[in-house]
Figure 1 (tube, rainbow, N blue to C red):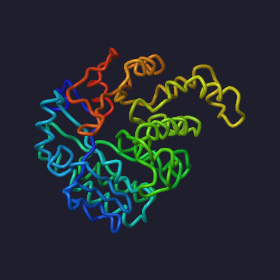
Figure 2 (tube, helix red, strand yellow):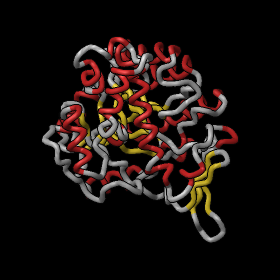
Figure 3 (tube, one colour):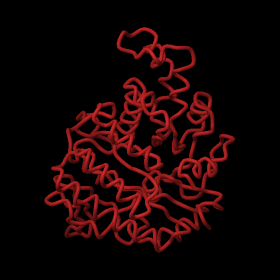
Length: 330
């Protein structure tokens, strides 16, 4: 089943690659087992215990394809594991990791060209290096999208990022933005988020919402009208905070003038793409009410803790596979 013919296209699927282990210097990544057999995935000083990567769909493409068949998923875009964005480590280590990750992932998808595509991992702490690696990934490796985390040493609205956004547009690929747990290789988050996995459940939502607001208020979407950005998990809480964000546009002095004209706020947020991996039909209904269905795409966090076991048709009346093809220029 090729992407052009696929009925179910999943754009939210992360990969862990054996061939990348040890390529980020002291940051790893490293996968080992404790004395009792518990698997541990180490990234710098962060240790994720109890997730079985080796032999799973995350690492074994044959296992992935079989699981996709069971889940009625025809085609997937593969992207880096959020634990390994490495946007805060020294640039040399990040560049080494990203180059190796992209080389290995390109080979994985080349073995299953009708079922898998790949997004480029990027060393975003070094913008010229990120641009160079994006060009190499797209032009030489045939990758289909740029991929990065919500957080890095500079903001999404930093003027230095404009050159990167221009490169994304020039290469005619979309940019996917996804959160990662705070404190892996960057600043720690709130201590309260360390309990009950709130860093993933609430922290990810906060990061996505902040990313959308930063792109909006920082004028990124205004300066780069041809830039296609997709935000995970329905854009966080942006649909719920819509009214509050819009009120700020009207009342706060720092709000850019271009957002104050009638309809501009909704038009700008309607230009972002959103995956519908949200676990809540009413939340999805609200997102559809806010932004429509033309830029919604299907995502699963495939094989992750929160992934559906089988394909779950979103309740919105949207041709999600066709939307994904438009987003991926397929």
